[in-house]
Length: 258
Image (cartoon, rainbow, N blue to C red; front, side, top):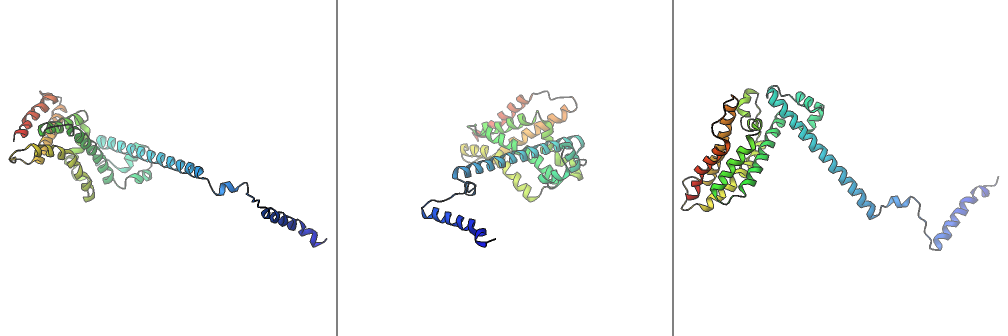
């Protein structure tokens, strides 16, 4: 068999391509359109990737909220001493390893549970105070929003404000970083009212504006503490929440005349 015959098809193929290029005709493989995507294809790929990441983020947030809800149930049912990561994972229907993906320790989990309650309340108070026109109205808004937020959900009130007192030796300790996250919430609650009080004070007040806001807040917390204590014994207060709030508001209205 001649070697020329064996290689003739290759030579013929080369000659065909040479003639095509010489004639100015370029060849594009049917697959070449997938090698260099068009701008439209690139946008489609990017949109799909962004949508996928958004779905993943929503799932993570939903799972995180489900874990916090499970932790709240275990904590209120069994107390902090019995609140283990295993118990929370079981309540949430996930593995302990899956729980560790969101929370590194029991302390971190309890902190986020308390923080989420405090943060939501601080945002609500800030919005209510923003509608006030005077210092007295702002102080009333602090008290009213605090009582209205927690009176129907006393378990959340106990968790946010009494947890450290009743937990005892089993209580958790917040780290400096965690305290750094909590402190801005105080500003959200007090700063708006303090600014209105300071703006309307004449000749300088005997009580600093922020202290006025803090005292109004303490009044609301005291009302809730008393309410929770007597209602747990089946002996509710003789005054309604609204009447008590109105009484406090009238007392603090003097701030606009100071």
